[in-house]
Image (tube, rainbow, N blue to C red; front, side, top):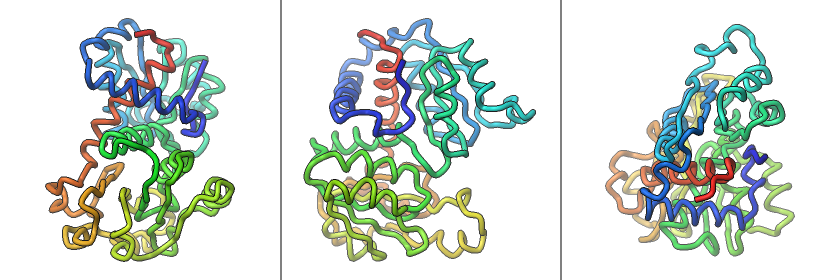
Length: 305
């Protein structure tokens, strides 16, 4: 039985297999319409979510399966003090696979050891968000036709941004990939990402504070919001929340084929005036997340198509 807790649990070959499956789902949706008939996905969301939860639910419905679960801790027995272990043991009696989001790092890993059915980490605190990375990879692949030989700028909250941590880890395995880390000093990427992931592989990266200065060299720009829920101090959040706002003016020096990504939700870090730019790919990215979650559900349930 396989789980997906960390994107690095999937080999490069498995990532390509999922991308190929997603591309086939896009091309032949009718072929997949009933392959999960009789299967149930439990969405255990102890933290609010729009895209991730709804895309998991849409993915399962489009595979012909069923969905049960909850969308906030208050509507589950966690509000009575039930442990994650007990919750997933019970849910494992009712469902075939679990997608779980939790504010505490490591909670989905604990769940995967107790559930008895496959568990997908749908985001754990500031740690990891592997299925968002699957959406990112498919978007880059569809827009660029490759996952190699490119310069990726990650901008905004790199300290707490779990989507950034997962993406940098995943893309570090492809040849010719370089990173530009764009953030305020207080929100720099955690040192362990540099020392454990990038440095051992000799991957080029630079840490800068200027978005405008980095723009001309980027093939991918991955914007993130400064997340109020990750801050202990409201004053720090207010001071840093508008550090980087992408506007049409700032894109004047960007490449014509730049791909602008954002895991969403957006607050104001990308001006709505950018939405009509053909380089804006973040709503495509949300759709691609559904296709990759469909491919992942099929893989973990070992469904033959």
